[in-house]
Length: 188
Image (cartoon, rainbow, N blue to C red):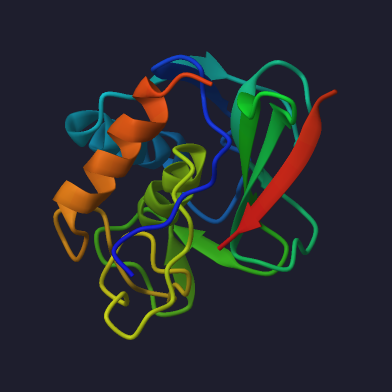
């Protein structure tokens, strides 16, 4: 599969986000997440804008898009949780939670074999904010949106293993086709 996407979407071409650098596993996790967002900004008409820090320690509908580490087992490495209006499919808010209870994190240029790379996982999860789905095909393993990630692995660029034309077309379609709050969770 080249790409897959959900029919819920942002009605704007940008989203501001806040970060709580609340993992003790590494330093610089906020900068790593911002770099991941800026990677999408280079190739997409949709713009992620860093708005500062947050003190939130769990996801929730609070009119703020947030990235943070949670200290309970989420059942996945990281998850994107979105709130949207079912009548229109309009996204209202997304949060990205990193599972800090079950996994160790790294921002090193060579992550240890027992840790997940913050920037790589954030790059993947922010693809979900653009409503791209996980891919699981035999030829998808090198793609950013491949749904199974490995400890110690780096995938910090969209140009590595992602079909730019297909994914960027999808992003343009979702952001330019402007369309009781509900939650949708999309774990990796």
